[in-house]
Image (tube, rainbow, N blue to C red):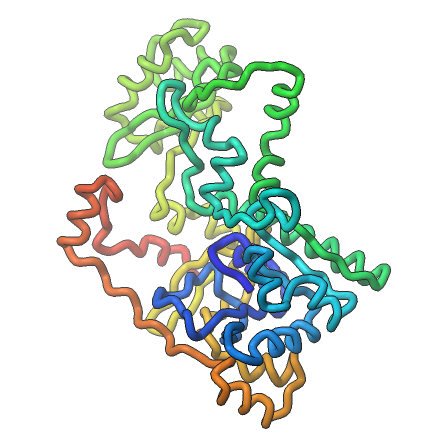
Length: 399
């Protein structure tokens, strides 16, 4: 039972590893949005309304036939429908049950809801991001906390399955967005516990480097990032034909002026040739047509009916060789789940559908391309810098 991104991201990896993943969601409260290929691929979709009479019992019958039962709803919701850990363990004693919640299922905040952006804030990440004289920032995607928590969940599930195979014992995994985010701040928390001052936001700067910043280059939204130690300053100056003081003092201003009219690609190549860490700042169009990622087989192609699109493979690699099954429609697999997993008879399946507890929703229509007026409005608001009319540069690398 998954929503948002944290658990869907975790179960996507389990599906990539060969697991049979069943996504359970209500056909009565279905979203009109198209499924996200990255989060829905290679999964079965079971349309079940828990608020309907008989719905929770059907869930328990399906859960009895599964190795893992996972959810990312508040504990109250699971207790309300009688599908919390004690209830599922009663019908599946060695089940691996994962509760992925905002703050965990116990403690004074155990019933509070939380999403990824809130987890990044309450855990302290935002306080450390951005310039010192500006508001706290946040990680660049809306799913940073979700994805890192999701990967922790994958690890925990695999470990719990290994434990079950060795001992016959099930496990209740209680994982939270809050705690997995705090785990990334270990050094800062340790320093503060011994009386160190709160670290100040420093933007892109890093006191261990003479140069550590992002610099605008030629073109719309084009930048390079450079990290150079004090010992590398002479090589940096030589590579870019600029005058820099030996200790790097004032280098940021000099480099900003020197690089503003240059193409970022040759700049990065010149610095990398001298062992200086540098890269062009990529946008998503760059990523989808990155020759390096395609050569490593990171992307796979998903047949979406009218066209195939590149889709990111698992984070451990192998997208090219991975089956990329399109997102199923909501409820497309309901009958299969009830027959093959829950063990219901044909008559019982028909009765579940007739009762309204089980159902399906037609696949949503493809999203229409935004109108020029919509594009202009979003650019005017500052939400977008541009919208490419056609972008299929990835096709030159696709097998």
